[in-house]
Length: 283
Image 1: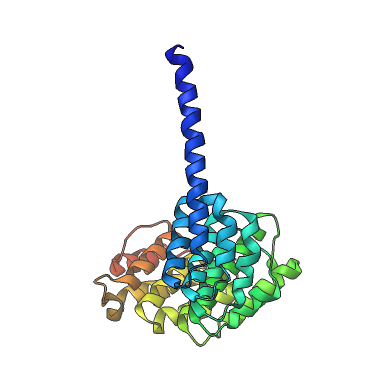
Image 2 (image 1 turned 30 degrees about the vertical axis):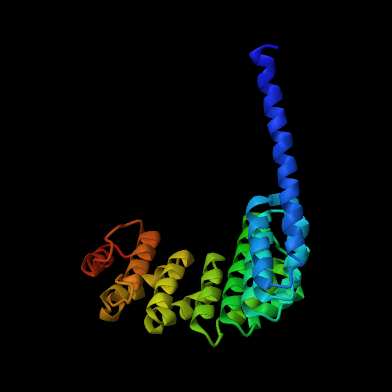
């Protein structure tokens, strides 16, 4: 037998052996999901997610309803990364999980899987008790809205789904947590909704340093020239140059937004921005 004919045969044999080994490994790991020890079940879910890919989908779906919240959380996260439409149903079911961080993971997973239906479960999450859940829900609603605009809908208000998105995001502007408010406002800004302007300016002036950065970036997304002066004033605010992380987050966000609005690049130099604004203020 020639070398040319041997090589394909060897490759085929290797593939067969690899598949057989993977099947045996999956069977063993799936068996571990029945262990009374949650640590063993959690390790099994992690290994299935990493090594078994599509073949392990059924095991991950089973694990998504495990009695241990950490096992469920890891399973939901893995289902979101699977890219498989069969993962959508258990991920949506996790919207109602009693554990806050699992609902948070579930919304992230739904976004990765391309879930775009604005059903009552998703709408309900805009008032979830956990701020992280509300944040990712507002972000997902923004993604859905942007896709609707790209697909040819001139205004979100032109469809029932669009009206629902806008209604949820507008409600988010009054959220008790500034992190959720800025998420809702940024999503509205990316949808060219001028209702985001005043809340974003308020957060830019009065929010925490991280929230100020996000508010500044939202004003850049909104593309409203009314934001030029508030953004320059943010560069001049000494509070925006103080950060536990050692970075002037709010100033950086304002500089990015100003460049986005004007096409100019004066970075965080407020004096140069003032000079430019006085000489060539856009209408």
